[in-house]
Length: 560
Image (cartoon, rainbow, N blue to C red; front, side):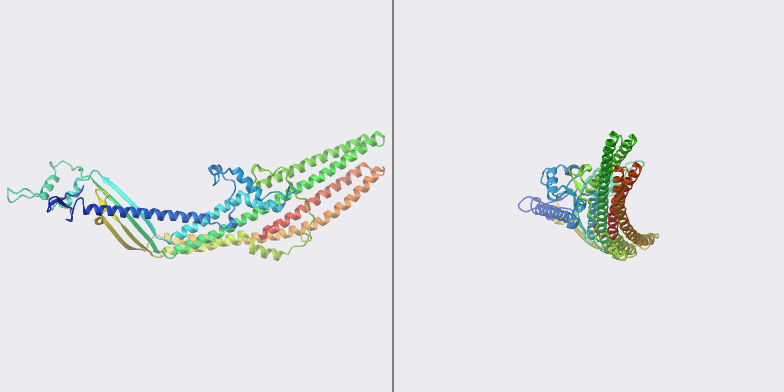
């Protein structure tokens, strides 16, 4: 409730009104101009706050989009509502078809090469997309840490309406009354003054009657801009900003390590599929050999030159070869499904008619002995997981500094500018309020909390250091094991190739003797089994050699 205004006659008629402060002004003149000016000032301030907020949002969005191009592998297929329409309102299936057409998965002959499989996995594997999202989150945390260096500017407005006030805290009475005593006028013809009347009204009529809240309702309106700027905090902000940058570097290294593991897994699945196709070829050749001998034995049986058990023997051989053929087909198909999953292909299958590349002959580089020292140096220089842990260790160092900064004082600057007015929101220059200040806060005693935080940060730093040492040992072990496996499989290929050549010569000689009636059926079965076993071991050792090189390159952090 506003104080009553005293009307003062003016020359030429009319009346001026004075508030509690005694300032004169025409009711429809100067005061209205001031009120309009206050409203304009408030509108301008609100618009400025809105513009600043929008610019801050645009800067945040721009930072979110500023992902390095080498990590910008956002998936073409989206989920949820985003999948219904793309940015231009086009059909997402058409968009995906155009994207896949620009980078074909198969070559002109319908062959899926290992290189194209790895490229597709790096584009479409969800694990890499999740790693990219973690990298973007780390970049956003860097922006959050940098925001701590800027002042906090806030726009606030508050309006309140008080409907009942305690009688003992009546604003009107407390503002005008003298000490609460009942005064008696000296002249009976003189009326009691206003203070005396209010004092009388505030006294209870009966001694046992409690005071109740009266209906002296009023409103309060406040509109203001406030600024708070942390000037010094013991360099904790700097430490946290550096820690966030190290964590961003760790996220980049983690994304590279995820790509390394994806390349290794795709290469392994591709080699397993090639192994299945090699075993298919061996089983098919074994079945063809068995059918050929079965037909020849049936002709001999018709000429009464072979026993019925000989025919049954070759029928058994054909059946066993068919079982091996089915097993090899299962291995090949399972490997293709795993490969399609790693490539991120919908439906878990490769395109219709896709074929894998033939297993090429070993090169001189494949058969050369690797140098363990060279590969250990490469691993120490290139392994992304080592760089990830190193960056994490550096971030823990900064966290220790941030914890130690708790022992330092904090200095802040504060300022505010705005308007406060009762009754209505028609602000004027008389309602303006401005303030500025400096706050220094220094925690003297915290019950040991700061010391415990420093101890915690130090323990986490030692843990990160131990994890880095353990990973160094694991990397060295992986490299040395891979080198041993490469050397072993190289020797295995050499021996198995000789075994295949010798077993084939023996099988061909025994087969010619069996056709001439000089060798027994048992001997022919034995030589055929030896040849099939040696051929299967050779194809397996060739795949093992490629896998050994794959493990060695992956252990060293090099692409396959």
